[in-house]
Length: 157
Image (cartoon, rainbow, N blue to C red):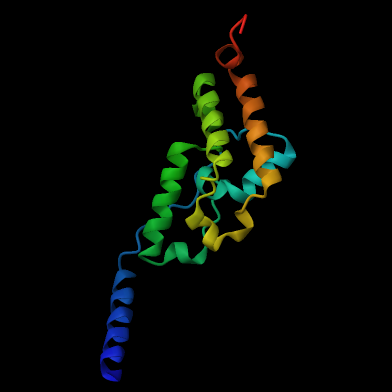
């Protein structure tokens, strides 16, 4: 039984070492084009809880260079930036900005963001109820400012 465990452990080590031959190219961070404008207290929360996946200011931890975890981290950052990128805010027209802000508020309010898997290694990104409310309130206000005609209530309602 002891010999089987040793062979299994050795096999796992060999496979892990072999995977390092294909770690993939580390993407780094593109230049920030235009950052979203938000009050300092909102930016502080977003930088801590959102920017690793939703900006060009990702802090790439050591494990983001070790396959197969590196593949997952890069995929998550790529997908996060594709859905919402605070560093390329200039690419969104006003209607799209309003939609992104609406989604941000909804995802934060229901607790879907930051993702639970991210929080397992980044406990400092966990939002308090007050921080969650701050982001939701700010997103709603910013959404009205970005596209007031589209988000204003209809007259007489």
